[in-house]
Image (cartoon, rainbow, N blue to C red; front, side, top):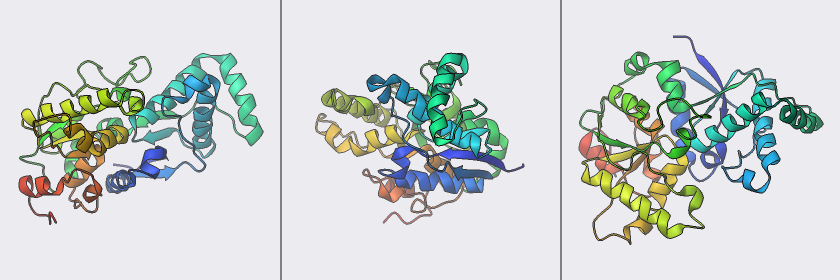
Amino acid sequence: MASLRYAFFPGCTLESAASELKTATELTCSALGMKLNEIEGWTCCGAAQVQDVDDFLGVAINARNIALAEQAGYDKILTVCNTCTLMLRTAKKRLDEDAALKEKVNEALAESGLEYKGTCEITHYLWALKDDIGIDNLKAHIRVPLTGLHVANYYGCHILMPPSVMGYENPRNPQSMETIAEALGATNVDFEQRLACCGFHSIYPAEQEALTSNGVSCLTAREAGADCIVTPCPLCHMALDMWQPDSQKKFTEDITMPILHLPQLVGLAMGFSPQELGIDHHIINALPMIKRVLGGWDAS
């Protein structure tokens, strides 16, 4: 298969608090023939909150990010973050459907020598695996089938909603994560929180509710027999992993549940070690689980 070329929008989380997830993304993409070229000069997408303060700014900053990719000659932007995907796709949809807004935004962008044209598609790592790489080709890259690993797939709401912007699959019963996990050799575990919100964007106004919800997600995955929760979103990953010790305080039951980011799951099946994928950097130690289920790696 010919190499695939993307303008890469890592987003703030992969550049800072969860840099190990960027490492896993770059390792797996390189091995799959997906050439990632980070957009030079990209800025924060606004994290689904900037529009509440300044709606025009929220559109303009994402138009700028897309325009930078267009100026560099790319026709597809790849993200790994659900929220970044939502923000970029929302801006694109609004600009492509509103000529007056597009003109106003381009007047602002002209000050820095940029123009939004609308020629760049916005895709997510999950979607690219399924559509650009393809399931058969993904299977051809598997070196360590994830046989015996029971995964609870946790989509995160921003990759599904609103369907008018995201529109990749049925938001009420998505199957892309299950398809990927099955292709990697893992066993999917159904659990009631697979479509739940992680609460990342509401942690300040609703901290207790977010912690409780995340605890329920971990507990129900555990009770369903999952070895780990897998999510395609670094914000969901951070919320489920980083807040888990605080969530535990709200439960008498043990809610301990390792959390993996989708590129890390893919990387394990491709033969990368947990350390190469940054899994040893997580708050909830996933190494003993990986050693127990898959073997072959040092769990220290």
